[in-house]
Length: 140
Image 1: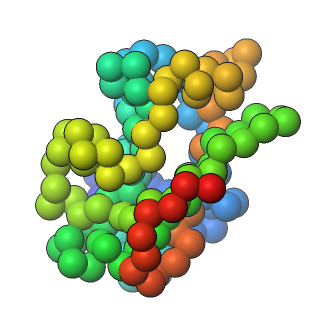
Image 2: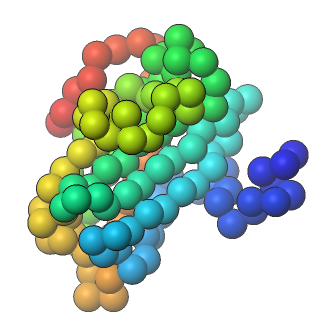
């Protein structure tokens, strides 16, 4: 209830088309957050450009042992190309800085990401839960 009432600008629901988000004004110091409700679970998608690297992590709001059951897929695309990566969700009990340092998230060089940013300085990002089974990280 607190998130819905106070942080409505950060909300995203299951009816969002394929988890698609247009990130605006992507630059060297970019940060973006979205709260995602999926079934009876709450997640936080944290996207950030830091020290020349692009990070995207899906945080499960709850204990680490439950977070490890969720696999998410990140797709970055333009009209002709795309990058797809999968990873295991992390818990919000772990700091984002620790996740970034350990690389337990989607992590790409920002110079590569620049190839997908439109002339309007928009990045098309799709983040979807693809499985609720525990699996190892995979890069596609």
